[in-house]
Length: 353
Image (tube, rainbow, N blue to C red; front, side, top):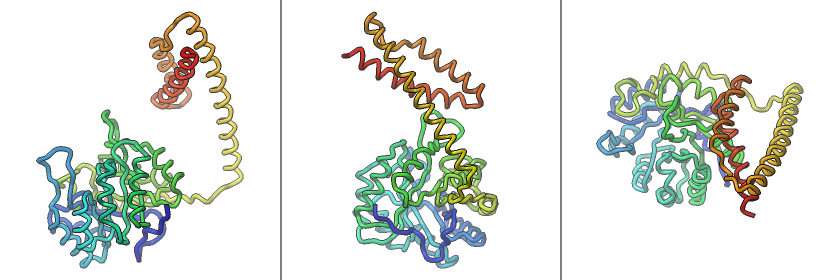
């Protein structure tokens, strides 16, 4: 994709670029109070949800067009740029009419190519930064497809927002980070700015600081963080919002590492990694050869490929072995699930010949 810088005049190029503000614009007083506190801390880009897609009807679904006037007042009073989420062509038209500076497409919208195309069509001929959140499900192609649709409409000032992926099994995070997906996005589109949304990944305000640091360690370009003048009283997502003071504290603690430093010692360590990877691949190839021999034996003796008892035994033992070697049991489980899947595939080829 042909891309251009998303930076607006007066925004520094240093990491992180920060977009901050409440999950939702609730009242004019709440919007202005939060914006003034953020501006006093040096923040330059304000965010607030005007239209809020909810999982079920009956919840607070945003103040609608009325809130755009409050964002215009934020620009006038503080000099901050303002941004909001759009999910339909009508949202785009209303936001542009109100002079919104940055738009973003939400995760639920990104998952729907029809909706993204509608937004792209509404943006034709407009020169404005547009950020695209990852879809709710871990589908990199869908994420890239949404970016391409908007790029094909003539917009070149694009960025991505990593907000994590929904999961049926709720664990520490509200949305699982699955960092390898934005890392692959960076590999595929190197010049695309990537923002981290720690508020939606964490779901709890105490997780925002470590998630911000992890995003910086992974060389993300920016952060989009939910900040509210009175988080506990927020009308939506209260538990994941922080005050402007707390946000300022979090940002001041961030360690921003450079990516250009490469010492001789680091080169030697990377060489060791390469050698380890070579050995792993050779051992996997050896394991697959044994698996194919087992497949031949099963075919000759009319034995089914999948042996559930043996599979469960492997997962349990390897998890324990991994923990004893300082690795996470869940990590070991994923690795051996993948190895077993490939072993089964190769044995099926032999049996079905």
